[in-house]
Amino acid sequence: MAGAVKCHPEFVVMAFEDSDATSLYLLSKQRTFLCNALQAVFLCLQATGQTSLTMTSAVLATTETYTRTQYCRWPCQCPRSPPRCAAGVSLVTDGCDCCKACAKQRGESCTEADTCDFHRGLYCDYSGDRPRYEIGVCAQIVGVGCVLNGVRYKNGETFQPNCKYNCTCINGAVGCVPMCTNSRPPLVWCPNPKLIKMAGKCCEQWVCDDSRKIRKTSPRHISSAAYEGEDEAWQKNCIVHTSPWSPCSKTCGLGISTRISNDNEQCRLLKESRLCNMRPCEVDITQHIKPGKKCLAVYRANEPMNYTISGCVSKSSYRPKFCGVCTDNRCCTPYKSKTIEVRFQCPDGTEFSWKIMWINACFCNLNCRNPNDIFADLAHYYDYSEIAN
Figure 1 (tube, rainbow, N blue to C red):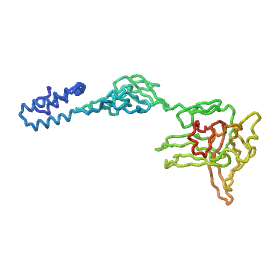
Figure 2 (figure 1 turned 90 degrees about the vertical axis):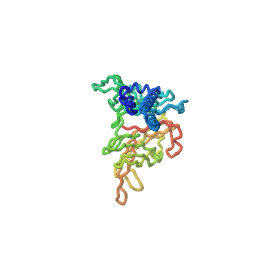
Figure 3 (figure 1 turned 120 degrees about the horizontal axis):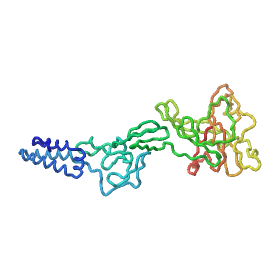
Figure 4 (figure 1 turned 135 degrees about the vertical axis):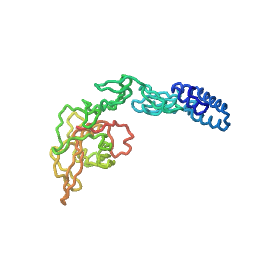
């Protein structure tokens, strides 16, 4: 205690505060340091003849300064199931050697119970919590950096070399976590499934690569296809989210399909609607099934037609494709489609536009469901969104 020049308790405490941080932490763990500090204060007060009240105040002040919170409790009380940690965060045993916990990351607070992620080369730095040394901050152990693709990264630095991976430099080694989840390929109806890059998306998605050349059946003035499945992207300060289109409300004739999207200026979730026509009700498609076959996946009329809504007729004629039928237990549904906008003209001269589902391809399978059955989602169906061209 070379720092205790005069016999005053505050100087005695100051001397201990100036001790080496590592030694001080070890002493406090063994409860030895607190006893020595109190004994020094007592001897100092006794030598100067101060009152018992001063002694009590000094002891209380010193005790409050150096008493550390006990974060561990025994016996251990752990939850039934371990926590689910974020991608790249280690699941470790806590500092109490009791329960599984998500390791604290760089810059997060740590205690004797909440330990830092040692897999990432982190340790708990208590130097900012003097003199208790009770709550620290996870810091990086000094180590060598990393070089990846000609770019140098510091030890402990987290970075994304591309949109598919989130990586961390750990003492010369680079560890990465994939950002793209493994998707499932299409069902057996697809002879040549392929993972391709979709426009505006980072992760590849499965599409069915049909070797047969599919002719463009949409009008020339219609824009290119848009992906019909779940969509999420950044737009200004809004995370744009668009749900898949619901199944058509009717299995034949003109029906309606809906989805939810916030792709608007207000970034508000709104309900969107489009018309759909899976197949004509007045045509017996089974008559068009080839001999020896049980299904006709796609049916297309020979002559162009006009859409009709409440007496209003589309200004242009179209020759759309429809999903066919099967003679067994299979049903045919679209897997390639887009949304087009059709202009209608009414007998009184007024005009309006409606979005309509434009079918490009269908497939026949056993996953048949009634779109109007509210209990249909309780059954097991493969969840595959329609695939864009």
